[in-house]
Length: 482
Image 1 (cartoon, helix red, strand yellow):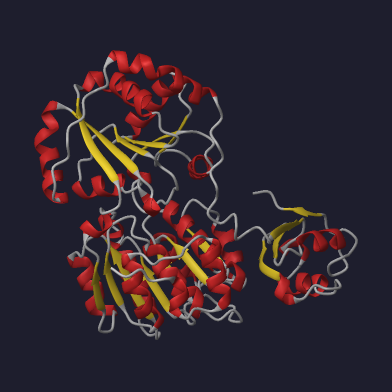
Image 2: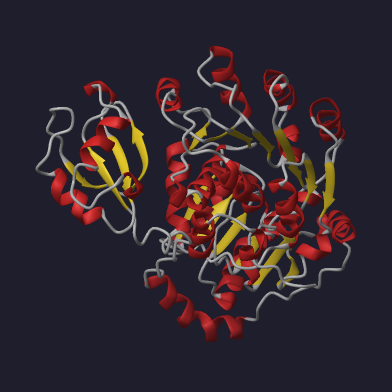
């Protein structure tokens, strides 16, 4: 198949520059199908498995086509989980950063009033979970009259979680507006068909076969092990495999807590996440894992779908997944972006029949793997222990090159001091050599404001703003903490 470059799509310079900085060069299969049609504003139903690059497939055309001058949201993206909403929002911010596109993530367990305040500011893209988005719609705090693009991401998971009625209500709110709608799903269910029939206009169906996605090098195997010997087995396997970065999946929160404690007590560099932990803690742990601050993440299926973490060399299904599609999503956490990956599944004797169903579902037999011998474990143990003692190398953030010439500044004043974006723009552009093109996204909160300074002008603005007032007010200013 011919390789297609992003530069062939006729995108604007600012979007092309951001894509290049993110190291996106060749289109994936789903992007080849979706991008030209999305740029022509066609309604789409896209069936595509995990790891296919679908987030960029819908984010790039939206960032290309939204109008910066419009203050109200022009795109709405629905996701089934808070974690995915946060990740999709970051993808929009990265792709649209040089165009100064502002994306906002809206989900539960966040203060409603803070979200209400943020929605009053210039926002181009809103990404969120159905429940909280519907709350804002019903209270009139999310304006829909300028929405031109609607994306339902991970639709199968959305409806499996019982969000159909909420999604249906959101679509009814949008029914009278002229918009482009796209649905992304690993499977096309009756619910998806129902939505498309009622709310979409002659949607084009795109089907990316699973075999295309599984063509990249993921080595899969299984270990037959008794339930009471699983912890001993994972120790032996991880000593021999000795991955730099590994996700370990369990079926329940209780199992995650138990295994995490066992690994921590065995001096593993590890963290854990599951739905029972506070949202702030989950996000913090996930970010630390993405940055490479520890090597082993123990988790439920919360991290199985849609979460894009670079350089995962090993996935271990400590508990065999009960759902066949979940197996595909779990293994899809490794071998991403053309990198090699390995997935090992522990199965107990009474799980063999269920495991054969997974093999039937994915279309090939997964080979068995023997638990490493005692001799092999002892031989490789010093290298494993050495790796556990050493701090992991910090993972390169895919947006690091993009952010090289951008500095985000923090100001200790916001809505409480009656400051507006125009006040910051006016003062900053009064600095010699600084124009509005050097100012990126401005986020005003209750007591603080964050301003992106582009084009490597951050140090100049930082130094000057220490000596200037904004709307007659003296504010503290410093580079924002990550």
